[in-house]
Image (tube, rainbow, N blue to C red; front, side):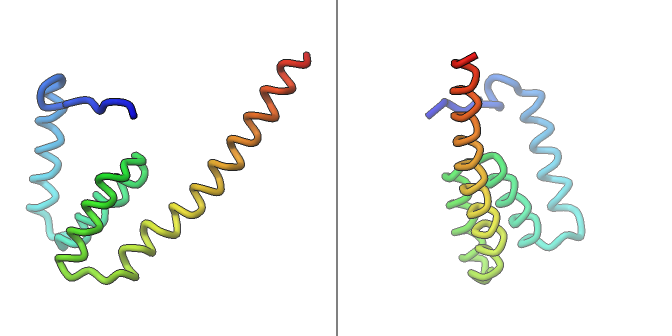
Length: 101
C-alpha cells in the first residue's frame, strides 16, 4: 500500500482549503446526510476502502438507510470491479502484442 500524503504537514495551504470547503458545506443549506453521502462518494472514487467503511458506518449511525448507502457504494463498486478486470485483461493483451512486434 502506498503511503498517503499528510496534507496538514506537507501542504498546509491545501489543507487550509480542504477545511474551508468543509466549513462552507456545513454552513450551507445542504442536509448533513447529503454532505456525508458526497464524502462517501469521493472516498469511493479515490479508492480508499478505509474511508468508505468509516463514512458508511457514520451514515448508518446517523440513521441513513442501508439501501441508500449501498445504492451509492455497492452499485458503482460492482461495475468498477468488472471494468477494472476488463481493463487488466486488455492491458495484458496490449502488452503481449507489443512484445511480438
